[in-house]
Structures are given as structure tokens and as C-alpha cells.
Length: 101
Image (cartoon, rainbow, N blue to C red; front, top):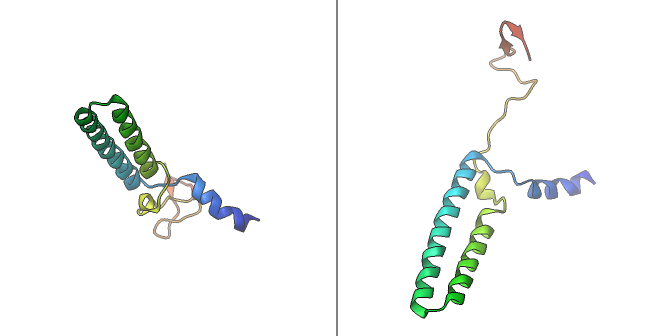
């Protein structure tokens, strides 16, 4: 059962790395600015506030679709975390003269 649930759990955990967070923030900012400018121009040209709001809503939903799911592009540079039993250079970790690991 764990073999079946593991891929689903990985998909829903939403793990992204620090570079992926930066990319997601940049994409959300750029896409929302473009969406706002485009909806303003469309509303100004057609003189229709409803069209402006629907265009802005569509751009916001598109931005959410691009940024919110943990796409694989956001996890290209995962961090290697130091485990408790890992050794650095064959020597245990020493903190204040006391060997920790």
C-alpha cells in the first residue's frame, strides 16, 4: 500500500527548492502585471468593466495554475540536507569539543 501512496504523497506535498521559489515568485509577479495591464487595455478599448474584470480574473486563474502546483521545474536544484548519522570527511561532527554524530 505504501508503494501506491508514495507517489501521490510526493505529488501533494508540494516540495520545491529555493531556486524554484524564486522562479515561482518572479513568474507570479510578471504574469499578474501582464494580466492587469492587458485587462486594463481591453477594458479601455471596449469600454466594458465586465470584460475588464473577467480578463483580470482569467489572468489571475492562469497565474495560479502556473505557480501554485509543484511542477517539476520548481524542484530542479534540491538541497542536500545534513543527516544525523552522516559524517563530514570521515570525521563525526564536533560541537564545542563534543562529538555529536
